[in-house]
Image 1: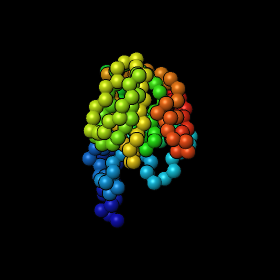
Image 2: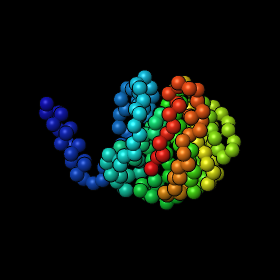
Image 3: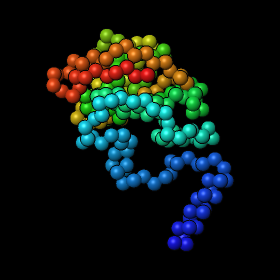
Length: 200
């Protein structure tokens, strides 16, 4: 009782004394120790409707750590969840990021950017279409996507992957070029036959 009240008052005083501290040291729930960055449980059916939402809370420019609730969440059927981080909104001058949780059979539209892009994956198996080149690669890897070149990918493994995309631009331009041909070419009757809607 009294100990909890003291802790609560101390926490409020800490909040009132200045900008909040980065939450990187917050304790993680037990489930996060086994699989961090879970956006959608692998055993649940995937949503059929896409979304692109504003961050739940504003980013404090005095912070050096960007938390998921400060990022812009998105989902593109049939299985790509993630966050956009336009760097200019977070204190970066020439860096932006996308963090994905891409489920088996999922991937983005065919699209291009006005800047080059790098994909970083520590584990998983991914099929790519970059320009006229098709290839499949297993993590760990870094994929290089030249500026202006159409590209997409699809998770061809059996588990969700967590891919990081990096752009050398504070606000990269996204140009949707239509459905993901890797997904539309999947076997009939699979959950990957529905094309992705264009992302904003």
